[in-house]
Length: 219
Image (cartoon, rainbow, N blue to C red; front, top):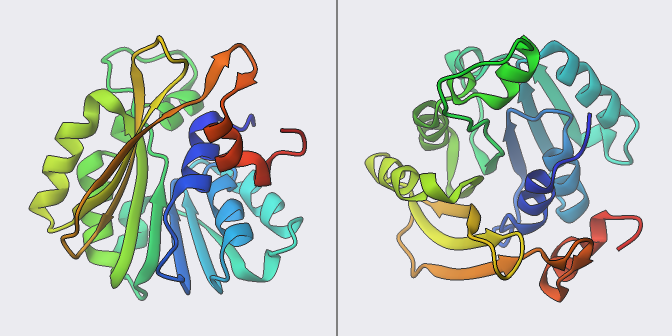
């Protein structure tokens, strides 16, 4: 399965200044966020959950073949199953949630599951973060910019407060496409900035290179 820009952005951007011991990756896909946080941090417990069987198997294989296999574990489960008996709190909760909210569906059920928001509603994701985040924990997501206001409003209902927001544009002349959001239980001043990925096709900006170069073989 291909590695998407959204996952790379979130994995590189997610704040880890709280020196996490434990990480939870919700809807891990092939495990890229967990692997990036294993590379970036000293977290000893990195749990991933993935409902799709093919993605789960790929995730397990990727974890086993990585240098951090002793710190990574993937559960084949939906978020609701995982929440039935929550045993741990997590210092980092991270998710690149599916967010195609349009009404149509394709003929490919697996792709639909990965791409449509009803596979992981924002409400369920935020409620999980509220229940599982440690006292000084950080909850990070990447979502469409058009959903930012709604998502932040939702987190307020669960006493999670944004403290870092980065809005992402493909090029200087295009509209803002994505929002990278980080939340904590503690109210802080909110740092807001903008990231532009490219100046032209495959001409990456210095900011994007600085953020992601540790994760690409050629950058």
